[in-house]
Image 1 (tube, rainbow, N blue to C red):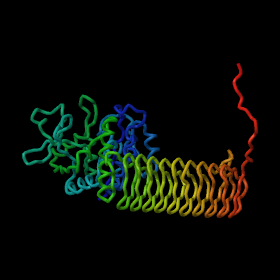
Image 2 (image 1 turned 90 degrees about the vertical axis):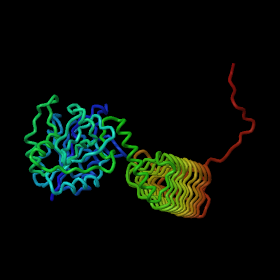
Image 3 (image 1 turned 90 degrees about the horizontal axis):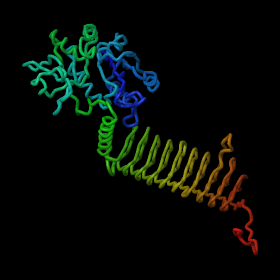
Image 4 (image 1 turned 120 degrees about the vertical axis):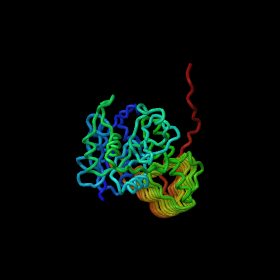
Amino acid sequence: MKLGVVILAAGLGKRMRSSLPKVLHPLAGRPLLGHVLDAARGCDAERVVVVHGHGGDRVQAAFRDEGCLWAEQSEQRGTGHALIQGMPMMSEVDRVMVLYGDVPLISSETLMRLVEVSADTELGVLTVEMSDPTGYGRILRDAEGRVTRIVEQKDATPEERRVREINTGFLIADRARLQTWLGRLGNDNAQGEYYLTDIIEMAAGEGVAIATAQPGTLSEVSGVNDRVQLAELERIHQRRAAEDLMRAGVTLADPARFDLRGRLEAEPDVSIDVNVVIEGEVRLASGVRIGPNCLLRDCVVGPGTEIQANCVIEEAEVGADARIGPFARLRPEARLADRTHVGNFVEIKKTRVGLGSKVNHLTYLGDAEVGAGVNVGAGTITCNYDGANKFKTRIGDGAFIGSNAALVAPVTVGAGATIGAGSVVNKDAPPDQLTVARARQVTIPGWRRPTKTG
């Protein structure tokens, strides 16, 4: 069986009150549509078509590398009309599944369950039981429990409104039969739209057994219509992610104050404090401790390392048993070896720091190679940029850089060298010697500070 998936993503999203197409609004750092595409891929779909409308160019640009196909719904004429736009690209598949670009928490497991229960029939529908189904279309069944049709709230009788099983909109159907049913859809209704739900009654009238499946949780089929609903689903998603991490051996100080906006690979006994944000691809080895209010993006942290409060680690690698922060920033291509120390208000970019080296206070290192056992004093900077080009600073093993030094690249500080505090070094400093580059201190006898006149 070849499965095709059509994702309906052409809605205007007026209630979002945004110029950004609704399906591009982020949940857990990814567009809503991205989550739905992940679920579709988890079903081993042969072909995925996204039906777009409002802001279609922006939507396609955001997913140009996702390998999906695109169909345009230029006029908003209902869900049935939207699906019709995508059907020409389904000619080579056996069955078609319909998903929604603004329902981001649907899981591949639930969709596969729908595939399985409908394997022996031509139509399957995902339904859900709600304690309060007000506003939703009800699933009506006959005395034998067979689905007969879907009735909308406004058209339902008082008895029908007491039904708690509702239609989610997700369905799977034999492609050829679906094509036939879509061709018979009409728009003789108050909105003048073509409703996908009408095919349920058509199928039942033809004696087709309509299979049903249910999601694991109600939130899987909850859509996003405004920013309030988006925020609600964000917290649900984050809570699930937090629980998965805790079950895998990670300690979270407060699961409600943790945000995973990418992928986190964490070994057992990692500890994460409150208000930590994870973005991109992050790997934390066993025993890593992350302090409060940190941002980690596309980075790797070795075993036993502590990231103290209020640090930003971006596209960097940190070795084992290191100590970073508080208030440190590691920028792209910072590479720190084992047992390194990087302290408060230190910024490191495109720099390798060797085994056991310390950069503890108020320092900037950019485009540098720092050897093992180096001590970099407070206020030190590598002057790596002349306004047009960038240059390299090299510091040998065991060097000691005094406070408030400026190393003007390109420059090399030899192994074991000492740079006197306050020096501006623009020539290579030889190994194992003291280099001082500062004006001689002078005291002027009898000098008086000026005073105001008048």
